[in-house]
Image 1: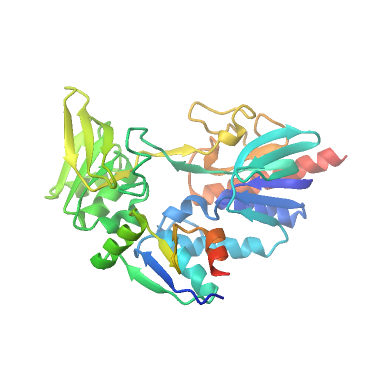
Image 2: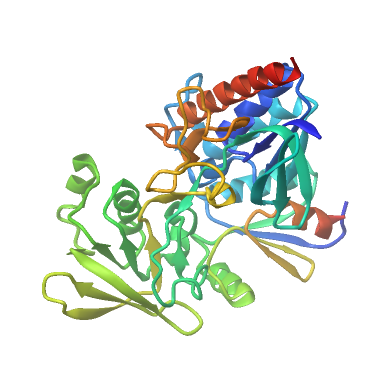
Length: 78
Length: 304
């Protein structure tokens, strides 16, 4: 579907994070998932990149999506 | 023109969709997301048929069931206004799209209430959060504040106590949450409780750096150094789109009869946006089903 690198920053207790990851899996998109609840370095990286502290964050190539925005995700993945 | 427009994609709207489709109504469902408030819930133990189910999983089951039926779904867009038009109702969305239907089920649910203090909007997502279970873990090792005194505030405090360096609980009133929760706060070393304190400002340049509070009795102000502020002060109904059209109660909820009728014939409402007692997933789903069946009867009467 896409050859862009897909990264997800998430926490284990966030329902929208699970929905984003389930959606990517369902679309057969390979992604790297960082648990920012445990990985402090990645949490810092996420905050620096997005200038915000909410999860989930999905990075597709150089584009950043905060939250589960299916329409935007679809357009970046196609 | 559609037979029925369902506005909202939470349990009420989705149940209405299933019932409308089974009555073979030409149906449109418009919603900014699917699942509504279930998206901010993790474990659900009181929806019949499941002893325990995670919020996202229940949403995906709802979604699968609804998509079995031939109803049109427009998600990712929100209805800005609902109006009467000749032969029914018309909506205009935030994206500027227009749709029409002979009858409507309005099921837009509720959203978190805002404090309306300086700094809140600017710092939302930069330390100000309305979903402690989502964003809480990002604040591990930091000082945080929770604003509110009800169950959701107390639950947020209990979660944050495990990971934050220090938690400040700020409540305008004495704590109103369940005893079983407030008892668990007793003896927590990294907790300060400020009862009868008003939150007056959230401070910070790029991210939240502090919160200013005022004691109601003495009027004395105090600034707490925190990196996160979780606002848990209840919910408000998403009824703006029908303001001026349907009658609302003093909380902004759409007033409905036991048959889900609003003050406007052909406009039905269901779930948390209405004045129905008890805001529960199972209640909302039941109300959505009722509203769709009533709308079907209305359309039958119209056709005669």
